[in-house]
Image 1 (tube, rainbow, N blue to C red):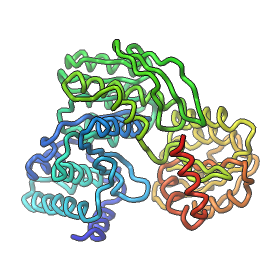
Image 2 (image 1 turned 180 degrees about the vertical axis):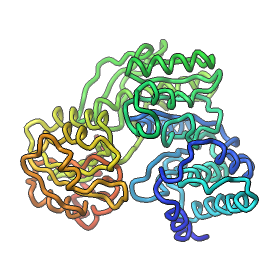
Image 3 (image 1 turned 90 degrees about the vertical axis):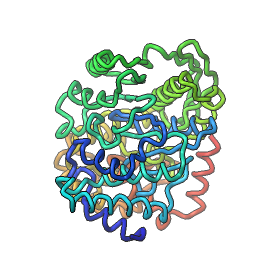
Image 4 (image 1 turned 60 degrees about the horizontal axis):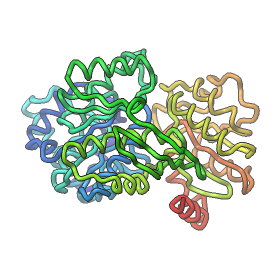
Length: 450
């Protein structure tokens, strides 16, 4: 198949949760038939509710700075599926994606014909197998795997990682992972492997206890960043944080969290802790590689500045915990500025609770809907909102919502698009036609210059 045919085949599977069986048997059968590409390089796995993508990107960047050819598998993508598979920061090419995906597709067809698979794998299982195969053909030195959903039964959880990382845990995907923090933590803790170190940046007390119990049962060394890491001289400059870190007797002065927001410091510390564990296993990761890796890490869609004058910022903020930290950042960084919010949400999210956190920030709110079957209509969002926003515009098309917000904003105002990574993706796609190149390039230059 060519690239377009691959995308058509992938689209025929539906969205990522459709057809998900939450069993490791299908992915294991596929990888076995492909010759176990996942075993041709060492791995790290990163689970959690919020922060796992940022932490994965930072750890991968640290490994690259240390001189290792590093693969990063992440989800979801914002604009193109190629974003999910990167080697040393470069997205998989269309040709390489078509080559690997076609091999996986043909392998699955053979297994289905032989009745070795009970049903067709899910969207995510196809892509996970494609990533494993691509990384093997790219002869990487190391792969960082971001868990898609949960951990215990996620398709990424088929290797024996050199280190596992669990970021903060909060309520999300309760219909799949369980209705309590304890149940969700149990699923996340499923990435812990016997005798292998696990870094926990979890803050919730009940979730921490679950992780401790799992680690103890598996005799897995547990590094809790809340106890082993000391952050000092924390200072914020234009939304990014600089800090000194001492961890397990080692000092890391002058670190810079590469992403906007104080909450990203916790993710940076988790990435450094994981890198330290790898260094103790013999990986050549110096303090300089850690410092440079953090500085150069990039993770789009998380308080990402895409334009200035007015300032346009994108963030997924798809659950209450994420919305809370975005709201705190907005109050700290944009105090006194007029803010307009472009908001969308999937129907299965805590729409009212997230809106309750984000809506009070804004002078005017534009409710919209990404092109997703799961997306809530603007009218549904409005009906779930309490209290009702003072000034609200219902605009079903995200690009037109952005255009309206830009028309209503002055050069010193802030436009925040938040509530769904699908919304972030559609806004990013719309930017070339909505904003002049000079404005977008100025924002990018300013961001890289911080």
